[in-house]
Image (cartoon, rainbow, N blue to C red; front, side, top):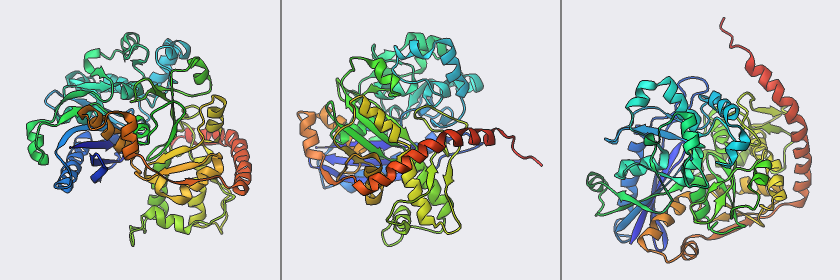
Length: 506
């Protein structure tokens, strides 16, 4: 017996086939982020679906003869991105990413009309324009003909299940990223839907992660070379699936997900005082594990690394098995830098969203090398989280070790710099693909492959090297963090003033 897992991120998808022993075969595809205008960020969902299908076919073919029949499929995906679709399973309109700047005004309107205090009693999040509701309202008001003709608007992981053959549904962990979920009721909020003008009929029916929602269509079984039936099992938000895939299945454990977004994610039971969590700038949502919730502190670290690679190292290509990032790391000095990088190239989202600031390197000299700048970027994206981790400690949410998963977790320097700056050990997981494994566990539990989550985690989750903080470097980075905290309040207004200037048109 085996299961299929699909993880759709902001810029790439991964597909895995898992047996009782773990990952048997995998494949992946990258896809472009479209920026038709400044501030716009979209995916061509139809193109992404074509690439997902290519990766599924490749992974299924690679697994043949190495495991038993694939019995079920489940999904992990980026959080806020939604896709307008028709019931004939075609894409009906644009697919806006979370950091697309369209829809900012709707967050202001929600704050004005309902207010943060009343809102957080429905949904324990902070109102911001990067959540799905703002993008959907923008589509409704600015593309009314498209919006009227589309049948459903589905979160991305649920879109994949729909395209495979399920009727439209919405996983609650993904639905929470819309800000339209009543988390206590476990369904769409009547009050928020009425306020937004988004009809309930435009959204999928609410389900928990890990339940059967359909079967893969006959046409796709033939296209993928699969023997049916293959159950479609609801998945979840990639950070929740990553937590499950990393073995974060009980209160007190926490994960560091290192992908396009770097995310620190503790798991916990419903807090005695939810408002205290929110006062410490911590949102939370349903885990894909029953009875647990998760909180996210995140930033677009991987996006910044890719930006640096594109702008400062265009001549580098994969060489002798080394990625471009590994080659850049080889250019880095071993010692900490005296350069501060402020990672606000795209709007920061903790402690609050700020769409007016910009990124900056401070401390460059004519002798500064590309390697020093790259190390400063890795340091700066870690310094960004210092206050957030301190806040987690005040709430008793900080674990003894962060379980690290995702692409950047394969880098020794990246993990060591974070251990030194944050002062917490990081344990690399040998599987490395927590989101993929988490979705696979949801599918496996539905088929009866494992009797419990503990059994699944014991079979598939293995810890590797632990990166301990270096006391001498910790002392240096405490000074860096103090400088970062001192400069940021002065730098922010300056960058805002610069960004408010009209573009030169002469």
